[in-house]
Length: 297
Image (cartoon, one colour):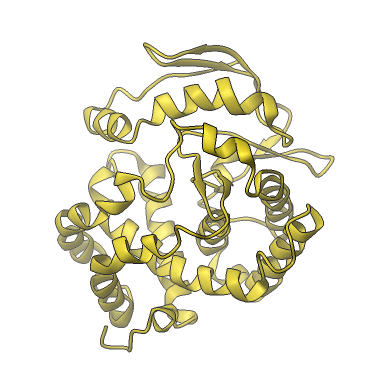
């Protein structure tokens, strides 16, 4: 079995409590896990206070490697799995009963500007000379617009999003199935958020450039195959969400440098991969222009 306990790091504890991470996963396993149609580990023990989960070991399934990046087969399997999951929960009436589960009005999103103000100077000190200048200006321009931008999505169809849909949280089996772990960031939100996060930074830059259009179309086709109405989610709407979401994640990474433990070498390597891959996508796709910005911000 796998025993999951809160971090002992004081900074991590503060962030976890602020975002109610352990409460959210506790309630997920109580209320949602019995209804899931995708593979997740069973919880043999689920204690709220002090938080403790004893989970099924998913061996011999193999966990992905976010730092290395996905193979094309892994990327296609991951997109198929999240599309099936999003389709299952698309506009599901039970979502409104999960009052413990945040929506787009979650304070941790709406207060991003405050953490950005603190973290951005450090981010520029670390990455400012390596990243395209116009992408940095787009982040500085967009951060103040985020509350209004989020509010503009309140009326969009929602599903149950994973919130941290990346290779380190995915286990691949020989039969082609994918199991998902770590539901601490589960939200009621438009599903494209998971697609953006996976495609933008779980693929190497070369892999993304070669396959992102095909993966986007594959994701939308998977939604439609799962019963989502064709006019409810389109390739064009997901592509627009992808472009805008790239800038949002670039801002969020710029605000989160303070949360990275420099003594954790893999954590540092992962964060650097997130930053470089996401900013490369923002630049490649002129993502700031999707928000009406020019190259000067």
